[in-house]
Length: 169
Length: 356
Image 1 (spheres, each protein chain N blue to C red):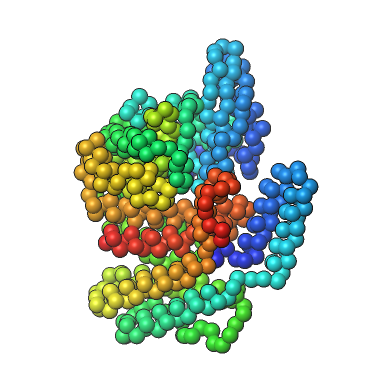
Image 2 (image 1 turned 45 degrees about the vertical axis):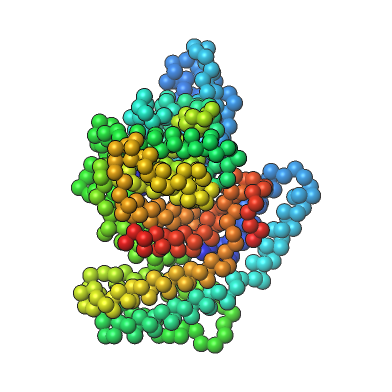
């Protein structure tokens, strides 16, 4: 979930057109590839990232911002957004993704602050606790992302091998 | 990459850029290569059996035979730094220094034939070296070789690393361009931090924070040595149960020898095993290395460099993310690398916890 959905589809289509089609002399295989390109173009118009995992990450970030505010207890710290950042249901994955990315940057600023000299001097116990909280929350957020990541196929991808006993997806 | 990038910046400042083609064209390279070798050999040289050996993301490797009336056929390797490679712009200098300095030492390297940093004749930075007979093992595949064979190779691999770290860098070409006020290890960390700070769609807070932690907690090296920078299974040629050459010196720099040891033991490069090449236990590796190098391995430094190895791996993956998302380089392997970021970042966080 790093590249945008549209960027990923464009990349797949270009890779098929530039590398697979010119190297295939089999009409049936070429037909399959062009069909896949057509289907991908359709997906680009109709589909998007699943919004569920993004919303889950967003909620986790919101909880973290609220906890930091509570633990900071008057210490001056980098700005945190008013939470919750989204109320009710939303299906706009791009908007949620943008909020998640903005949340990551804010979490980064908070983590650098909490582990820095200024926060340590102001309240060492609170700073340590906030640092731990942030690290744990960021790892939990990564876990959500890992749940939507297929198993590695590094061996096949790096070597171009057909077999290798790796994941199906 | 860190030193290579720095050095190539230096070179760019010093030498006017020749007009370069935007991408590497194999036919044009072959023609230019024939002209180049004809000039340096002093007789008309023909290039035969010319072909790419790899489809990697970085340096492009060609194998070929140089044929001239003056002498017997020579099997050679050409490596070219492409303008759109993952770590472009490239410098040929670390590899040239390494091949020159290590020739005839206890570290087997291919003999250097020719090199050009400005790439005037071929259009890109390049070097030519001798072809070495043998096989390159795949680091991520469980090998079919028998364990005794692998054990013999793994032991040689560590003994060669020890030989590399025993060399006094002060008497090699590495010393002069890397002098500066900042410690070499900190320069390397700063290079990766700068690379990670380049804008991409995705920002990973743990990498930002972890980069600062690494910079603030970098241990003093037991001795500053030549560091290969990518010393792992897959970066050597083995032939008849013997390591015939150590390859890929593009990340070579001065630094802490623990860096190479930690990188070599990463499970990623050992078919996900905690054992080196799937056969040599960690304690055996350390014991063998200490005896062969005379350098005492510090648990704390090794833990630091294990975290640093994952940080570097994350930074390299982010170069791929950037190439796909920002530079619109449509190689789907780059997009796949992006999807591995969460697992690398989590592993990095755990490694930092262990190192702290």
